[in-house]
Amino acid sequence: MRKFSYISILMMVFMVVASQTGWADEATLDTGDNAWILTSSALVLLMTPGLAFFYGGMCSVKNINNMIMMVFLCMAIISVQWVFWGYTLSFGTDHGSFIGGLGMAGLRGITPDSLSGTLSEYTFVAFQATFAIITLGLILGAVEGRMRFSACMLFIPLWATACYDPVCHWVWGGGWCGNMGILDFAGGTVVHINSAAAALALCLFLGKRKKSNIRPPANVPMIALGAGLLWFGWFGFNAGSELAADGRAAFAWVITNTAAATAAFTWIVCEWIHRGKPTLLGMASGAVAGLVCITPAAGFVGPLGAVQMGIMAGVGCYFACVKMKAAIGYDDALDVVGVHGVGGTIGAFATGLYCTKFVTGPDGVDGLFIGWSAEGFNQLGLQCVGFLATWAYAFAVTCIICFIVKYTTGLRTTEEAEDKGLDLALHAEAAYHFETESTGTLK
Image (tube, rainbow, N blue to C red; front, side, top):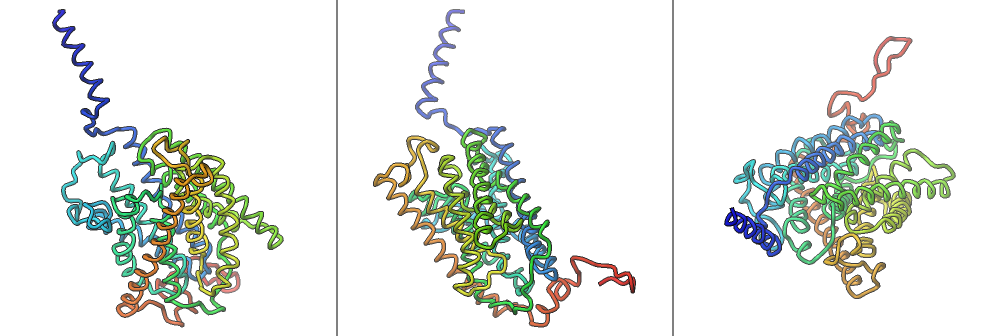
């Protein structure tokens, strides 16, 4: 009996020592973490239909179905592309700090027992797939009423492969951004700046719409519905990016909500002062701008930093949408550049201002406005390198892809199709049918 007690004590001592020295660090599945990230995956996937409603409501009444269908097309194509080669290019074995290898093409070698940290690797695959899906959807808001559907079908897989997957690898897959210490908690560069740079290139290649085809939003309540679904799903987007069900995930949840609420309020104040009346469209746009801005910073900044970033997003994105677009002269139909490009850039920059060890712990960095130190200044410089490199790469690669698509399927629809509306011209269905009392026919 005494011998058994000695053995038990020795085993306990060994386990304590092993836990302190890393001998017992073999990865195990944490069911709580796994359940939360599966839930987050569903929340982020819901954001894509939310985006479809958000964009669809802002479209001309004759292009609603086309816009919603293009965004849903991203779910169909990227879900398959991610399995065959998107995941391995993003998270496979690093090649030159630029791209992952093809060792996991078709998810080869990943079994139900495979782990990624405390998660099933299939959970991680699912979560990251939803980010790739919505990034492609974001781009398409810039092209309302002008892009061939066949061109869209070709553009989506080409851009995901040549642009999204490399930038994702740079930041989260072991590439140069992550190795340098550039901070992007949930996708300010990977998702928002990446998609906005592509949207800018794409709308420049497509050219402007005819003035007669630029019409007011068809359905403002639909916009509010879409914004609400985006806000709801964004908690999976940001809090889920902690990849664990822990206190920092809860912290990111609160930070995300705070920034979105602040930006929504700030936008309508700007609108009220500038135009004389606040609008529902403005409040919805402001909320999305705040969500975009806080995305790279959600796990790095404190509550007061989130408020300040929300104000920066509300002011910056409002004037980018109403002033910058007109000054430069590009036709970004649904303000992808103004909201996601400007908001993402403000967020990536401000992460270097407000990141704090209060959130990240002693191994983190106090941003310039927190520590006023060389360390904070260096972090701000790294943030600038990250977002400038993403802007340049995504814009250049998208231009190349536009050339390819233009000389294969063709890029822009015919003038006749644009005048008629893409819902009828390309899909032979209208979003709304109104029955007239005089003839009893549908129009």
